[in-house]
Length: 404
Image (tube, rainbow, N blue to C red):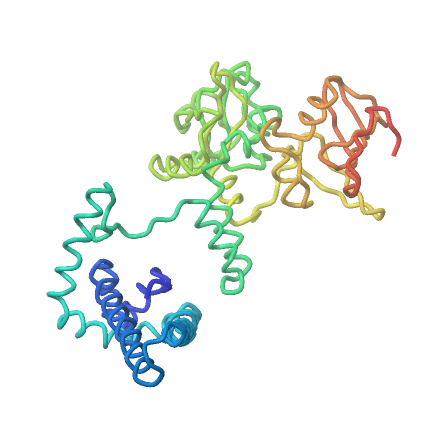
Protein backbone atom coordinates (compact mmCIF):
# COMPACT_ATOMS: atom_id res chain seq x y z
CA UNK A 1 0.00 0.00 0.00
CA UNK A 2 2.68 2.51 0.99
CA UNK A 3 4.89 1.66 -2.00
CA UNK A 4 2.21 2.71 -4.50
CA UNK A 5 2.96 5.66 -6.77
CA UNK A 6 0.29 8.19 -5.73
CA UNK A 7 0.27 9.93 -9.11
CA UNK A 8 -0.13 6.66 -10.98
CA UNK A 9 -2.83 5.66 -8.49
CA UNK A 10 -4.80 8.79 -9.43
CA UNK A 11 -4.50 7.86 -13.08
CA UNK A 12 -5.70 4.32 -12.38
CA UNK A 13 -8.68 5.70 -10.44
CA UNK A 14 -9.60 7.85 -13.45
CA UNK A 15 -9.36 4.81 -15.72
CA UNK A 16 -11.56 2.87 -13.25
CA UNK A 17 -9.02 0.15 -12.51
CA UNK A 18 -10.63 -2.41 -10.16
CA UNK A 19 -9.52 -1.78 -6.58
CA UNK A 20 -7.87 1.57 -7.33
CA UNK A 21 -10.66 3.73 -5.88
CA UNK A 22 -10.88 1.56 -2.77
CA UNK A 23 -7.11 1.69 -2.32
CA UNK A 24 -7.12 5.47 -2.66
CA UNK A 25 -9.83 5.77 -0.01
CA UNK A 26 -7.82 3.60 2.38
CA UNK A 27 -4.65 5.62 1.82
CA UNK A 28 -6.59 8.85 2.46
CA UNK A 29 -6.71 7.84 6.16
CA UNK A 30 -3.27 6.36 6.86
CA UNK A 31 -3.80 6.18 10.63
CA UNK A 32 -6.79 3.85 10.23
CA UNK A 33 -5.14 1.80 7.49
CA UNK A 34 -1.96 1.29 9.51
CA UNK A 35 -4.07 0.60 12.59
CA UNK A 36 -5.99 -2.30 11.06
CA UNK A 37 -2.90 -3.74 9.30
CA UNK A 38 -0.71 -3.63 12.40
CA UNK A 39 -3.54 -4.85 14.60
CA UNK A 40 -3.91 -7.98 12.52
CA UNK A 41 -0.15 -8.33 12.10
CA UNK A 42 0.57 -8.18 15.83
CA UNK A 43 -2.34 -10.44 16.71
CA UNK A 44 -1.02 -13.11 14.35
CA UNK A 45 2.57 -12.73 15.58
CA UNK A 46 1.53 -12.85 19.22
CA UNK A 47 -0.71 -15.86 18.58
CA UNK A 48 2.09 -17.64 16.71
CA UNK A 49 4.53 -17.02 19.57
CA UNK A 50 2.00 -18.23 22.15
CA UNK A 51 1.15 -21.32 20.12
CA UNK A 52 4.84 -22.10 19.68
CA UNK A 53 5.42 -21.84 23.43
CA UNK A 54 2.49 -24.19 24.14
CA UNK A 55 3.67 -26.77 21.59
CA UNK A 56 7.26 -26.56 22.85
CA UNK A 57 6.20 -27.14 26.47
CA UNK A 58 4.01 -30.08 25.53
CA UNK A 59 6.70 -31.74 23.39
CA UNK A 60 9.93 -30.88 25.23
CA UNK A 61 8.86 -29.60 28.63
CA UNK A 62 9.51 -26.20 30.25
CA UNK A 63 13.27 -26.26 29.84
CA UNK A 64 15.16 -23.07 29.03
CA UNK A 65 16.84 -24.70 26.07
CA UNK A 66 13.54 -25.84 24.58
CA UNK A 67 11.91 -22.40 25.03
CA UNK A 68 14.97 -20.69 23.51
CA UNK A 69 14.91 -23.07 20.54
CA UNK A 70 11.17 -22.53 20.08
CA UNK A 71 11.61 -18.75 20.22
CA UNK A 72 14.39 -18.83 17.64
CA UNK A 73 12.41 -21.15 15.38
CA UNK A 74 9.23 -19.02 15.35
CA UNK A 75 11.29 -15.82 14.96
CA UNK A 76 12.95 -17.30 11.86
CA UNK A 77 9.60 -18.37 10.37
CA UNK A 78 7.99 -14.97 11.03
CA UNK A 79 10.93 -13.07 9.52
CA UNK A 80 11.10 -15.19 6.38
CA UNK A 81 7.43 -15.93 5.67
CA UNK A 82 5.59 -13.03 7.38
CA UNK A 83 7.94 -10.05 7.21
CA UNK A 84 10.81 -9.96 4.72
CA UNK A 85 9.45 -12.06 1.84
CA UNK A 86 5.94 -10.51 1.75
CA UNK A 87 7.33 -6.98 2.06
CA UNK A 88 9.84 -7.50 -0.75
CA UNK A 89 7.09 -8.89 -2.98
CA UNK A 90 4.77 -6.02 -2.03
CA UNK A 91 7.41 -3.36 -2.72
CA UNK A 92 8.28 -4.97 -6.07
CA UNK A 93 4.69 -5.48 -7.26
CA UNK A 94 2.67 -2.90 -5.28
CA UNK A 95 -0.32 -2.68 -7.62
CA UNK A 96 -0.70 -6.46 -8.01
CA UNK A 97 -0.73 -6.85 -4.20
CA UNK A 98 -2.43 -3.67 -2.97
CA UNK A 99 -5.55 -3.68 -5.17
CA UNK A 100 -6.69 -7.22 -4.25
CA UNK A 101 -5.70 -6.58 -0.61
CA UNK A 102 -7.94 -3.50 -0.56
CA UNK A 103 -11.02 -5.72 -0.95
CA UNK A 104 -9.94 -7.57 2.22
CA UNK A 105 -8.74 -4.57 4.26
CA UNK A 106 -11.83 -2.42 3.63
CA UNK A 107 -14.38 -4.79 5.25
CA UNK A 108 -11.81 -5.76 7.89
CA UNK A 109 -11.43 -2.08 8.80
CA UNK A 110 -15.20 -1.73 9.25
CA UNK A 111 -15.31 -4.84 11.42
CA UNK A 112 -12.32 -3.90 13.57
CA UNK A 113 -12.96 -0.14 13.58
CA UNK A 114 -13.82 0.07 17.32
CA UNK A 115 -10.52 -1.57 18.26
CA UNK A 116 -8.61 0.56 15.75
CA UNK A 117 -10.28 3.73 17.05
CA UNK A 118 -9.51 2.84 20.65
CA UNK A 119 -5.87 2.12 19.82
CA UNK A 120 -5.44 5.27 17.75
CA UNK A 121 -6.89 7.29 20.61
CA UNK A 122 -3.79 6.56 22.65
CA UNK A 123 -1.56 7.00 19.59
CA UNK A 124 -2.91 10.50 18.92
CA UNK A 125 -2.46 11.44 22.54
CA UNK A 126 1.16 10.30 22.48
CA UNK A 127 1.81 12.17 19.23
CA UNK A 128 0.32 15.36 20.67
CA UNK A 129 2.64 15.07 23.65
CA UNK A 130 5.54 14.80 21.19
CA UNK A 131 4.06 17.70 19.13
CA UNK A 132 3.87 15.56 16.00
CA UNK A 133 1.20 15.23 13.34
CA UNK A 134 -0.73 11.98 13.16
CA UNK A 135 -0.90 12.13 9.34
CA UNK A 136 -4.71 12.05 9.20
CA UNK A 137 -4.74 15.54 7.68
CA UNK A 138 -1.77 14.93 5.48
CA UNK A 139 -1.85 17.02 2.33
CA UNK A 140 -1.27 15.54 -1.09
CA UNK A 141 2.40 15.01 -1.91
CA UNK A 142 3.99 18.02 -3.55
CA UNK A 143 6.96 18.02 -5.87
CA UNK A 144 9.49 20.79 -6.20
CA UNK A 145 10.77 21.89 -9.60
CA UNK A 146 14.10 20.00 -9.25
CA UNK A 147 12.19 16.87 -8.21
CA UNK A 148 9.87 17.18 -11.19
CA UNK A 149 12.86 17.66 -13.47
CA UNK A 150 14.45 14.50 -12.06
CA UNK A 151 11.18 12.66 -12.64
CA UNK A 152 11.21 13.66 -16.32
CA UNK A 153 14.83 12.53 -16.67
CA UNK A 154 14.06 9.20 -15.03
CA UNK A 155 11.07 8.69 -17.35
CA UNK A 156 13.19 8.90 -20.49
CA UNK A 157 12.14 5.37 -21.49
CA UNK A 158 8.48 6.42 -21.60
CA UNK A 159 8.72 9.98 -22.98
CA UNK A 160 9.87 10.69 -26.57
CA UNK A 161 13.22 12.45 -26.62
CA UNK A 162 11.80 15.59 -28.25
CA UNK A 163 9.02 15.83 -25.65
CA UNK A 164 11.53 15.30 -22.85
CA UNK A 165 13.72 18.09 -24.24
CA UNK A 166 10.76 20.48 -24.37
CA UNK A 167 9.80 19.69 -20.77
CA UNK A 168 13.35 20.20 -19.51
CA UNK A 169 13.58 23.51 -21.37
CA UNK A 170 10.33 24.63 -19.74
CA UNK A 171 11.80 23.99 -16.29
CA UNK A 172 14.75 26.25 -17.10
CA UNK A 173 12.65 29.23 -18.23
CA UNK A 174 12.36 30.52 -14.66
CA UNK A 175 16.16 30.70 -14.30
CA UNK A 176 16.81 32.28 -17.72
CA UNK A 177 16.38 36.03 -18.12
CA UNK A 178 15.59 38.02 -21.24
CA UNK A 179 19.14 39.31 -21.57
CA UNK A 180 20.26 35.69 -22.07
CA UNK A 181 18.35 35.38 -25.34
CA UNK A 182 17.93 38.96 -26.57
CA UNK A 183 19.27 40.38 -29.81
CA UNK A 184 22.08 42.78 -28.75
CA UNK A 185 21.73 46.48 -29.40
CA UNK A 186 24.42 46.45 -32.10
CA UNK A 187 22.43 43.88 -34.13
CA UNK A 188 19.01 45.56 -33.93
CA UNK A 189 17.44 46.40 -37.28
CA UNK A 190 15.62 49.72 -36.77
CA UNK A 191 14.33 52.71 -38.73
CA UNK A 192 15.56 56.27 -38.25
CA UNK A 193 12.59 58.57 -38.77
CA UNK A 194 14.97 61.52 -39.26
CA UNK A 195 16.62 59.81 -42.22
CA UNK A 196 15.65 60.83 -45.79
CA UNK A 197 12.33 59.40 -46.95
CA UNK A 198 13.98 57.46 -49.75
CA UNK A 199 16.28 55.69 -47.28
CA UNK A 200 13.32 54.82 -45.05
CA UNK A 201 11.27 53.45 -47.97
CA UNK A 202 14.17 51.35 -49.19
CA UNK A 203 14.78 49.95 -45.69
CA UNK A 204 11.13 48.98 -45.28
CA UNK A 205 11.05 47.33 -48.70
CA UNK A 206 14.16 45.23 -47.98
CA UNK A 207 13.87 44.64 -44.24
CA UNK A 208 14.27 41.13 -42.86
CA UNK A 209 11.81 41.42 -39.95
CA UNK A 210 8.09 42.14 -39.80
CA UNK A 211 8.41 44.49 -36.82
CA UNK A 212 10.95 47.30 -36.71
CA UNK A 213 11.72 49.71 -33.86
CA UNK A 214 11.58 53.31 -34.99
CA UNK A 215 13.77 56.05 -33.48
CA UNK A 216 14.75 59.65 -34.07
CA UNK A 217 18.40 60.52 -34.42
CA UNK A 218 19.86 57.90 -32.05
CA UNK A 219 18.82 54.38 -31.13
CA UNK A 220 18.12 55.33 -27.51
CA UNK A 221 15.30 57.61 -28.68
CA UNK A 222 12.85 54.88 -29.74
CA UNK A 223 9.38 56.30 -30.33
CA UNK A 224 7.49 53.22 -31.49
CA UNK A 225 7.45 49.84 -33.16
CA UNK A 226 6.48 49.63 -36.80
CA UNK A 227 4.65 46.64 -38.27
CA UNK A 228 5.74 46.34 -41.89
CA UNK A 229 2.44 44.81 -42.98
CA UNK A 230 0.57 47.82 -41.57
CA UNK A 231 2.84 50.12 -43.55
CA UNK A 232 2.22 48.26 -46.79
CA UNK A 233 -1.52 48.44 -46.17
CA UNK A 234 -1.34 52.23 -46.27
CA UNK A 235 -0.94 52.21 -50.04
CA UNK A 236 1.91 53.19 -52.26
CA UNK A 237 5.31 52.64 -50.70
CA UNK A 238 6.83 55.61 -52.52
CA UNK A 239 4.45 57.99 -50.72
CA UNK A 240 5.48 56.99 -47.23
CA UNK A 241 7.01 59.60 -44.93
CA UNK A 242 7.68 59.94 -41.17
CA UNK A 243 4.31 61.63 -40.62
CA UNK A 244 2.09 58.83 -41.90
CA UNK A 245 4.43 56.21 -40.45
CA UNK A 246 3.71 57.54 -36.95
CA UNK A 247 0.02 56.78 -37.49
CA UNK A 248 0.62 53.02 -37.66
CA UNK A 249 3.36 52.73 -35.03
CA UNK A 250 2.66 50.97 -31.75
CA UNK A 251 3.86 52.27 -28.40
CA UNK A 252 7.25 50.73 -27.55
CA UNK A 253 7.20 48.04 -24.86
CA UNK A 254 10.21 48.10 -22.52
CA UNK A 255 11.37 45.12 -20.47
CA UNK A 256 13.87 45.04 -17.56
CA UNK A 257 16.91 42.92 -18.41
CA UNK A 258 16.50 40.65 -15.36
CA UNK A 259 12.94 39.54 -16.22
CA UNK A 260 12.67 35.70 -16.25
CA UNK A 261 11.66 34.24 -19.60
CA UNK A 262 8.63 32.48 -18.14
CA UNK A 263 7.29 35.76 -16.73
CA UNK A 264 7.98 37.53 -20.00
CA UNK A 265 6.16 34.86 -21.98
CA UNK A 266 3.11 35.41 -19.79
CA UNK A 267 3.39 39.20 -20.24
CA UNK A 268 3.58 38.86 -24.01
CA UNK A 269 0.40 36.79 -23.84
CA UNK A 270 -1.41 39.25 -21.57
CA UNK A 271 -0.33 42.31 -23.57
CA UNK A 272 -0.91 40.56 -26.90
CA UNK A 273 2.51 41.70 -28.04
CA UNK A 274 5.40 39.92 -29.73
CA UNK A 275 8.37 42.26 -29.31
CA UNK A 276 9.90 44.04 -26.34
CA UNK A 277 12.89 46.35 -25.93
CA UNK A 278 15.30 45.31 -23.18
CA UNK A 279 16.71 48.05 -20.94
CA UNK A 280 19.19 47.94 -18.07
CA UNK A 281 18.81 49.40 -14.57
CA UNK A 282 19.70 52.86 -15.92
CA UNK A 283 17.10 52.74 -18.68
CA UNK A 284 19.69 52.32 -21.43
CA UNK A 285 18.72 50.14 -24.38
CA UNK A 286 20.49 46.77 -24.32
CA UNK A 287 18.66 44.90 -27.08
CA UNK A 288 15.30 43.43 -27.99
CA UNK A 289 13.53 40.14 -27.41
CA UNK A 290 10.65 38.59 -29.30
CA UNK A 291 8.22 35.83 -28.48
CA UNK A 292 10.02 33.73 -31.11
CA UNK A 293 13.23 33.95 -29.06
CA UNK A 294 11.41 32.54 -26.02
CA UNK A 295 9.64 29.79 -27.96
CA UNK A 296 12.94 28.71 -29.49
CA UNK A 297 14.31 28.23 -25.98
CA UNK A 298 11.48 25.72 -25.43
CA UNK A 299 11.18 23.80 -28.69
CA UNK A 300 14.41 24.68 -30.50
CA UNK A 301 15.02 26.80 -33.56
CA UNK A 302 12.21 27.01 -36.08
CA UNK A 303 13.01 30.29 -37.88
CA UNK A 304 15.94 31.44 -39.94
CA UNK A 305 18.34 33.99 -38.49
CA UNK A 306 18.73 37.50 -39.77
CA UNK A 307 22.00 38.22 -41.58
CA UNK A 308 22.64 40.90 -38.93
CA UNK A 309 22.41 38.46 -36.03
CA UNK A 310 25.55 36.70 -34.88
CA UNK A 311 25.50 33.01 -34.19
CA UNK A 312 26.56 31.24 -37.37
CA UNK A 313 28.56 28.07 -36.67
CA UNK A 314 30.91 26.68 -39.31
CA UNK A 315 32.22 23.21 -38.51
CA UNK A 316 35.74 22.50 -39.75
CA UNK A 317 37.22 19.19 -41.06
CA UNK A 318 39.60 18.96 -38.07
CA UNK A 319 36.65 18.82 -35.64
CA UNK A 320 36.84 22.48 -34.60
CA UNK A 321 34.10 25.07 -35.10
CA UNK A 322 34.46 28.62 -36.36
CA UNK A 323 31.96 30.92 -34.62
CA UNK A 324 31.32 34.63 -34.34
CA UNK A 325 32.46 36.43 -31.22
CA UNK A 326 28.98 37.76 -30.58
CA UNK A 327 27.46 34.25 -30.35
CA UNK A 328 25.42 33.61 -27.24
CA UNK A 329 27.00 31.15 -24.80
CA UNK A 330 23.68 29.38 -24.23
CA UNK A 331 23.35 28.72 -27.95
CA UNK A 332 26.93 27.45 -28.23
CA UNK A 333 26.45 25.13 -25.26
CA UNK A 334 23.29 23.73 -26.78
CA UNK A 335 24.48 23.33 -30.38
CA UNK A 336 28.07 22.24 -29.75
CA UNK A 337 27.48 20.46 -26.41
CA UNK A 338 29.94 22.75 -24.60
CA UNK A 339 30.08 23.71 -20.94
CA UNK A 340 30.76 27.44 -20.89
CA UNK A 341 29.64 29.15 -17.64
CA UNK A 342 26.38 31.06 -17.93
CA UNK A 343 26.45 33.05 -14.69
CA UNK A 344 28.58 35.88 -16.11
CA UNK A 345 28.96 37.26 -19.64
CA UNK A 346 26.30 36.27 -22.16
CA UNK A 347 28.44 36.13 -25.30
CA UNK A 348 31.67 34.38 -26.27
CA UNK A 349 33.33 37.76 -26.81
CA UNK A 350 32.44 38.85 -23.28
CA UNK A 351 33.62 35.56 -21.78
CA UNK A 352 37.05 35.78 -23.41
CA UNK A 353 37.52 39.47 -22.54
CA UNK A 354 36.57 38.80 -18.93
CA UNK A 355 39.00 35.89 -18.75
CA UNK A 356 41.94 37.75 -20.31
CA UNK A 357 41.19 41.22 -18.90
CA UNK A 358 42.51 42.51 -22.21
CA UNK A 359 41.65 42.67 -25.91
CA UNK A 360 43.69 39.83 -27.46
CA UNK A 361 45.55 39.83 -30.74
CA UNK A 362 44.57 37.40 -33.53
CA UNK A 363 46.32 34.06 -32.99
CA UNK A 364 46.03 34.22 -29.20
CA UNK A 365 44.76 31.01 -27.64
CA UNK A 366 43.17 30.46 -24.26
CA UNK A 367 41.63 27.55 -22.37
CA UNK A 368 38.24 28.24 -20.78
CA UNK A 369 36.25 25.50 -19.04
CA UNK A 370 38.45 22.94 -20.76
CA UNK A 371 37.68 24.30 -24.23
CA UNK A 372 40.70 25.55 -26.28
CA UNK A 373 39.77 28.80 -28.03
CA UNK A 374 41.76 30.52 -30.77
CA UNK A 375 41.05 34.16 -31.55
CA UNK A 376 40.87 34.36 -35.34
CA UNK A 377 39.81 37.98 -35.89
CA UNK A 378 39.39 41.11 -33.80
CA UNK A 379 37.90 44.43 -34.83
CA UNK A 380 38.27 47.60 -32.81
CA UNK A 381 37.24 46.64 -29.25
CA UNK A 382 35.60 43.28 -29.89
CA UNK A 383 36.46 39.75 -30.97
CA UNK A 384 34.79 38.99 -34.27
CA UNK A 385 35.70 35.32 -34.93
CA UNK A 386 36.82 32.45 -32.70
CA UNK A 387 37.82 28.88 -33.46
CA UNK A 388 36.65 26.38 -30.83
CA UNK A 389 38.60 23.14 -30.69
CA UNK A 390 37.34 19.86 -29.15
CA UNK A 391 37.57 19.82 -25.38
CA UNK A 392 40.90 18.75 -23.92
CA UNK A 393 41.00 15.84 -21.50
CA UNK A 394 43.45 17.54 -19.14
CA UNK A 395 42.59 20.62 -17.12
CA UNK A 396 45.83 22.55 -17.59
CA UNK A 397 45.13 26.22 -18.02
CA UNK A 398 46.95 27.83 -20.97
CA UNK A 399 48.55 31.24 -20.89
CA UNK A 400 46.88 33.76 -23.13
CA UNK A 401 49.76 33.52 -25.62
CA UNK A 402 50.15 29.74 -25.53
CA UNK A 403 50.10 27.97 -28.89
CA UNK A 404 47.82 24.99 -29.48
